[in-house]
Amino acid sequence: MTLERRRSRAGSRSVRRACAAAAAALMVAGLVACTPGKTDAPSKGTQSAAPEVIGDVPGNLREFYEQEVVWESCEGDFLCATIDVPLDYDDPGKRSIELSVILSEAGGSPEGTVLVNPGGPGGSGYATVRDSLQGVTTDRLRGEYNILGFDPRGVGRSTPVDCLSDEEVDQARTQVLDPSTEAGLEEARASAAEYASACAESSGELLGFVDTESAARDLDILRAVAGDRKLNYLGFSYGTFLGATYAELFPEKVGRMVLDGGLDPAASNEEVTLGQARAFEKAIRAYVQDCQSSSNCPLKGSVDDGIQTIRDLIASVESSPLTAADGRLVTASVFISGFILPLYNDANWPALTQALSSALRGDPTTMLMLADLGAERNEDGSYESNSYEVFSAVNCLDYPMETDPVQMAADAAELEEASPTLGRFLAYGGVTCESWPYEPVSEPRPFAAEGADPIVVVGTTGDPATPYEWSQALARQLDSAVLVTWEAEGHTAYGRGNQCIADAVDDYFIDGTVPEDGLVCS
Image (cartoon, rainbow, N blue to C red; front, side):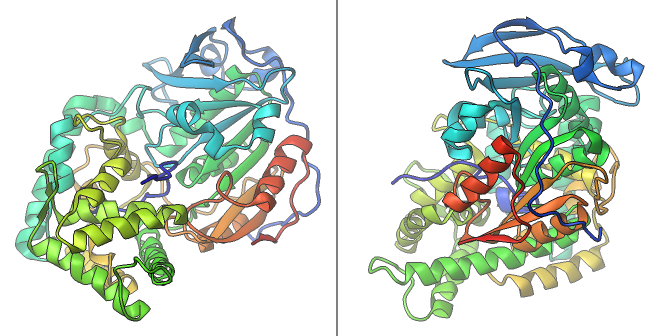
């Protein structure tokens, strides 16, 4: 069985730990974007940004923009470097942290550098460029631009958030709690408080500075050390929120920016969760309908009958967890995280069919494999990344969370109505941040990025993780945005979509041709 792993976690912003552990816009069409303003691209050896690339920055940040960067051969045909950024932009002299970056060179005389973020929060841009570059970009784009992957602050190879050992992550992923009862809510709160304490002990003050705005400020330093006067950026899923935040902070420094699988920056945490509940239920229906067109589909009867079979299977795992071939226990939380993963890409629906077929016979081994793939767990029990920890750390800073028990119960009822299959597993997410050692540093609000060059927002109509309506909302809010639509199932479009999508994005990056606002690719 082959499975498309790329961006498997992207956009899972509000698929809660319970699920992983169990303005008026000025639309522009036919415009030509300004030239990115390239300079000499990085090459092996030592390099520092030229003054005209650095631009106008506060004096207490110049040392970060002017730092000498040592680019070394790595990972075969790539260049790697470590970039220093301030932990706290309000007090940059206090402490610096490191960002790990990897560069794929275009060869010849590149147009500039495109920074790539695969999503999350917690996704590794380093691993994406190293392992999946051909899956997230086209040959044409890679031939004209250097592609820079980076692990955002707190993520992976950069100065990382650290909360749990690998064994403790295993335990957390299998944990099943029921916050809908008074006793269950208290147990969930105690577990969340213990987790927050472990994060604070291991990660210290870093936990207070992994918010998206700080990460967006890091992008400007990365832009400069990459040698570009303006930021060229390709962001998927949560990466659209990171890119839009940069555009709001530095509109005059936006070069060519593509935001694929938009997140609505004005949506509250609760609105984001509810939107995903509806979108995943829609994706489940689309999957079942497709499955039933095949003779090997285990979901018999009508589409509604097939969906009910899935719900009954989940309920049975809740009451009686299954044991996989390796002896590991598959609880409802693990089962749900495995079930969700293939919904991100309709090319993976056959893998979901295989997993469901086996689970209905009492064997959860394939579903566990899917869950491990999404969690980036290796066969030896180690984890490739710290995305589990980063997810909570970033969201707790980016969003004020609802923690009132009465309101959480009301929200839970709304979630279950929106998604009878998954809704209850998405509820009570605010409990995770209730004991967090740092308060949120921002609130949801619309972004306009007034004065930015044209920005391309791409939305997929059947996207379960970043519902199409969010891309529409983001395009309306950003003054210079145009919206490109892919009529398809699955999460995000570029690198996965058809030639229409590829041409729209590549023509924009390479030739500066902004797609017609409202372009629909089917």
